[in-house]
Image (cartoon, rainbow, N blue to C red):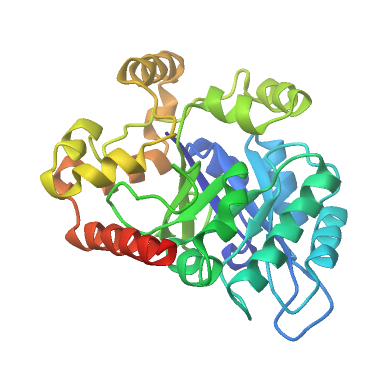
Length: 321
């Protein structure tokens, strides 16, 4: 599990060297949107500054566009791609969380946007959404309307300390935004916190082009290594054995890459060997994560989450019938 953040002008001026030292490995940066009832694209005034800050400090970055339905999706995609230019790090991102329509009409717009971005950038964009939006808006008329989305990476928003469930049609998620109230060195305001489900090598091999990997890895050579990640959010075996969530776990991890304990241990040991003595006193983003998800804060599976999954299955069956 690799920690990351997502930021916009709301975070103000960011001290990227401190963000790097805190352990952040990737960052999604707001690039653009067409504000409600406006036909002129708004460009986040901190986008270029944040992109340079992330690049200069060896942090993988991705740009996201806040999607609206009142402007043609192809125009949105073309404007977004033109703004970002050459995508040298993580793929572009569709931020899908508001809509002026739903059902098949919305699905067509969203599909048109991601297909255009794929054509222009040469890479499939990541879809950011939440179950609370996706289910009532994208699958409003027919569940199978969204079968195509499984071909695109999922960045899911779900603010919980429990291992999140799935959203149809994905078998799992790639990125998980689990909090919008994070506080880390280098950023004065609250910031969204994220996990990537996999190792740093997984992130590189799946989401970076060869040139971007070489360029960014070169910046990491000789860099101080942040405090190793301790994944104590939810012990996988313990969660799987929780009676009321057994079926949720089985479905949530289907098709998802989860690093083995041996792989995690090897990664942690390697980072510990490279850590310098001075760094031990550096305030760490990962320390914050460890504190947030320490064993004393572990909870049994959330009954409400179980009920949410059950309702989704019932909803799905009703649609089929």
